[in-house]
Amino acid sequence: PHVRVGVIGTGVIGKEHIRRLTHVTAGAEVVAVADVDPARARDAVAGLTGARVHADGLEVVRDDQVDAVVVASWGPTHEEYVLAGIDAGKPVFCEKPLAATQEACVRIIDAELAAGRRLVQVGFMRRYDAAYRALKDVLASGSIGLPLMMHCAHRNPSVSSHYTPDMALTDTAVHEFDVTRWLLDEEIVAINVLTPRPNRRGGELQDPLLILLETENGVLVDVETSVNIGYGYDIRHEVVGEDGTAELGAGSPVVLRRDGGATGPIPADWEERFSGAYEVEMQEWVHSVAAGASSGPTSWDGYAAAVLSDAGMESLRTGAKVAVKLRPKPDLYATRTP
Ligand code: NAD
Ligand code: ISE
Image 1 (cartoon, rainbow, N blue to C red):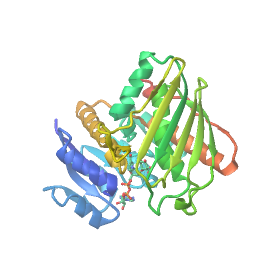
Image 2 (cartoon, rainbow, N blue to C red):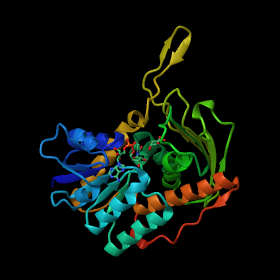
Image 3 (cartoon, protein in one colour):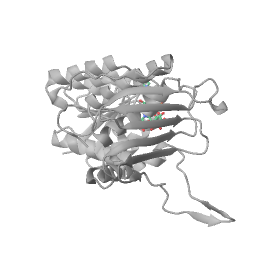
Image 4 (tube, rainbow, N blue to C red):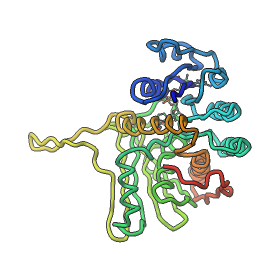
């Protein structure tokens, strides 16, 4: 069946999701949108006949013509819309972070438990990226033995003036928190955030960060976040195993050699690097909505990432390693999703 989608938040990624749902995803149609900036909402559906513009995101959730909701507004506003979606019994695709605090994520989990079913998918799109999926397949094959360490880099060319110091954890490293849990299939038990010499391009921002994670089985993971690196959007991930290593490829199918040098393009931003992943992510979400079965990263995954973000912020503030403790995992989240 055809899924009628309402989109809340029509900024950079909201507009991209609308474009994908309209022109790329099969079996979906955007029928309603809202943004606190009404001009942005109107602009986002300018070419879509029949799509309604609501004054408020809650009206999108309540709209009878909306079967499922995409939340792509600013992080602190997610909780209200996700809870409204669960209350209305409508599936919600929520961009990361699921909510601004772990307490808010617990409220979302409790609402799903009360509803008795999973309605929420969180936008951790790396799980849908072809290179990350291939890396996970290598780990599962056992060909490099047990994983011992991982080295990760998350580099953005620049960030907007709205980017606050906490966002290096809540907005940026949150992807490595999730992908570490997903690749290793175990929880992270400690986090230590170190602060190297700051990059002059970052102004007041503490950038870069070097984040050390420890997992239940003793795997150590280092994560560099550099959000003012200038040269491009660069995502690196290497797993060191007992018998070998596996890492994401450099990305470009073509390397140019001329004038005494070898070069290949580097993506400009997350949209370029992960465009394929967002497409698979949206398609799988729409299929799951049409089938009435949830899939993808859950509220539990959003909660685990939020606990790590909170612990990371404490570590950044105190300079000490912080233990990470999750509440017991409800059975609702026991089955594995992609
Ligand atoms: P953005 O600022 O471009 O867009 C956010 C939009 O939400 C703005 O148009 C704003 O007016 C609107 N908005 C804010 N509060 C609202 C509210 N209460 N109700 C309705 N609309 C509201 O930001 P963005 O870069 O598009 O990011 C949006 C979300 O998507 C964030 O949570 C961000 O972390 C996430 N994101 C995820 C990825 C990814 O790789 N998965 C990439 C970028 C952004
Ligand atoms: C952004 O919101 C994303 O999710 C991107 O994937 C990430 O690279 C960036 O740092 C975030 O601000």
